[in-house]
Length: 277
Length: 306
Image (cartoon, rainbow over all chains, first blue to last red; front, top):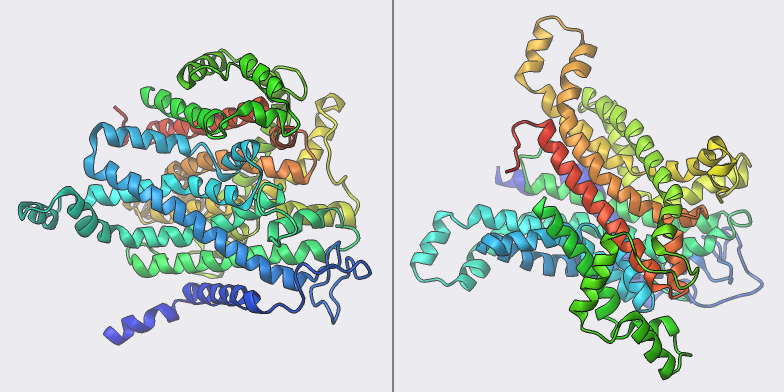
């Protein structure tokens, strides 16, 4: 049985396809840090808006920059936004959920109403608000996306804390003299991790989609830095002249999101045997 | 009700803090770098920025509740009337997208459930995976590429207003609504599928089948009706997402809605407009979420709110 269990993850089709796509993305991003076929920022006035050619397998953009190199470099910003935005949402959301679930009472009530309010601010709204006050930038994008993730992480953590707060092992630890800090951090928190990990995997592609949309609107990554969403914004003016310019960056976004979603679904099935496939 | 008031209070505080407290000086943001210190001081006094934050907040929120969101710096008209006029684009767009979403998702979800673990099911689920992965604005660009650049059937964007008649107006909203709705259907389709699957396992479905009811009647009269509760909940939550999504699609199709208003206001440093639009949309989303909760209680008598 034990051997069978260990072999199970790779036999799970969804999980395996997701893992392969995700690894390919991470590998692309890693390679782009040391090598891209051309300099992603190098312009060439004569080679503007070429479709795919031997020299530029995915063609060039309106400044003659190599699209393949720019899409490779764009993978780095996408991954970075995903990691940081999910980190912000999870880091702060878990603290809210922890305090809410453990202490209950008016604190819980207040925090949960605050989370209801935060739910009224999808990433795009927070980004609009902050871009009006500060300059539009990648940092604002990451914070806006992270804030949008707060409620889901807070609610998940709260639910787990409510579930474990009165379990025997917690009561036993308390009887042995463990304080609130030790009970929260050492005894309850580790038990809440599996659903949080699944949620982080699910949130990651959402962050990538949000960054693409915000950069498309001009609120995220700023030129000349390569970002998939920004490339689509630039491509829109040249849809008639060079449709490939709009097709490749979009394909990069869609396949990345697909990969992470499959990975997340697979992971959820593997971690939670109760969910039917 | 009390919870709703508290939540809306938090919404307004969040908007207020970001606009008035975080940046330090709203007057300098509006005037930009070319503003003189005297002009900044005048504007600060005119906007009441020299008073304590709590006083400023109370005054601002009292006016907002009465429908006064301030005046646009760029257009010199009340922000509330700007929002109302732009809603004539954003609201129909959101509703049309929601209609397309429901019309695609529910049949697909039911179809997948009835073909559980067979080819039809897998095909439907692959479709919905693609739907989640394709960003709405890219779908919009692809639709423009196909229908206006290649085939020349429709114009690539723009909106002439409802004055030209209902049909031309709806026609300019159709492509953006399709991009928004068809590609949001995925979550709802999956919800429908698992809700129907769940109900099909129940005893009363077995009874219905045992008494010789046709499969269609079992499905629509018994299963689907009981599966509607989670479906309506998710559809409600998606409605808020669609509203946020329409902000992006308005830019793809050059539609003069709330989103374009807000994005234009950012480059014009028109803070009252951004503040008004964000406060309005966030409150709408919160209200939709609460409405969904209440509706949930009505639909499922097992759930009661005290």
